[in-house]
Amino acid sequence: MNTQSDAPVASAKHQLRESMKLSKPTRAPAWIERSQRSLDEILAQFLMHLKPRVVFSYLSKAGEVGTRTVIEHLLAQDVTLMVPSLLDRTQMVATRFPGWQALRPGALGILTPPSKEACTETVDLVLVPGLAFSTRGARLGYGAGYYDRWLAAHPAATRVGLAFEYQLSEHVPIAAHDEPLDYLVTERRLIACVRRNSGAPQESSSS
Image (cartoon, rainbow, N blue to C red; front, side, top):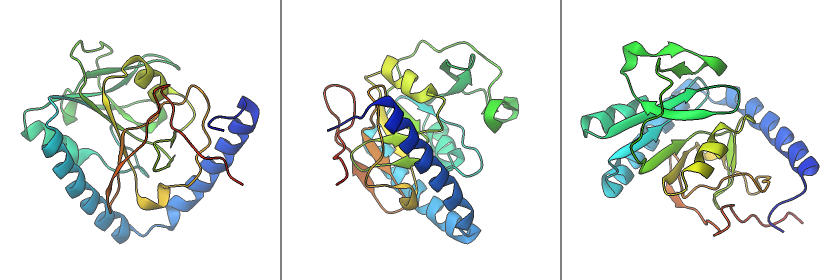
């Protein structure tokens, strides 16, 4: 069984979110720095292989896998870079990166570009944040659904989740609207995920 009814899934997601939030403070700063550096190296090699021309990247906040290094790498490669801009409580668009100095603190503690205008370029690759992931492509976000809606509207973009190994879970609860990933990059490895034609990751049910 690949997805469950909404109520049990919502409860399971809440429990996993709380568990992941509690695990973050236990990571020593030195460990985070080493792991981030290793992840950045693996991600840079992967991007060199894929050679995307238009990339949509999240702007990391405290507690997430950082994206500043990969953003600087992409800009140095003359890649067109898009970043998130929230229109309201449900909609997010990809807008052109205006430079670090132009960003301002926005909703949810995330740096935000001044523009609310969605770019018309076709995104080749999107870097996706999250709290927990499975190696089969399931992702647990923060609950607002911004990325699931954006991914559903842009199915051609290669989807890459960024995570530390401790964020991987054998079973990530998923619902029909949850969008799967193509790849995961951690501080140890690049993971090619399994995607179903229906647009949701296959998850084996727990015994």
